[in-house]
Length: 233
Image (cartoon, rainbow, N blue to C red; front, side, top):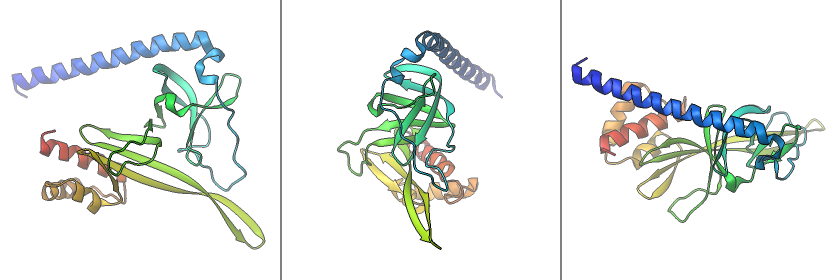
């Protein structure tokens, strides 16, 4: 490594450490605030969540149990709350200290970090191709943005005098680019939108052995990041 490269590397490390220290300081202050207000927090003023009827699977993101999460609600950071995301009703639910299940008001949710996902409440606007309002996973945020929408549809099937209820899970991806949104269903669809660098991106995908069908999130994130670098964005 050259002397100049070493200096740049040290500066980057310093910036990352400062950002981490800032986040830890914010979380520490927020934890103290949350400890004091506890059940009087604005988080716990909302509608009671109703459980689903018995089904063979669950409609929640990753797990049907509550998980520890980091939440920003009405611009207040809550470093450690118990959340779960209902993909059928599109509701983010918090468990109170008294074990009540409260539906968070979607318009007050800035973001949630749950199961390693960065979740936002997206508001539909008038841009071309804009998806509907709801909870989305923000996969990438640069000049381009990648959104992931998961949905669980309650389905009934009758067989041998037995009614089976289960949730059919679907996933949709959306790319924001140059003032428009595009629904991305496969490799070909993404590369078509990322013109005029289709050839370069095909080589990149091949060299990294990326496969949309195997890991769509990795494919989308890395390919869009490479596109921004090629475009100088």
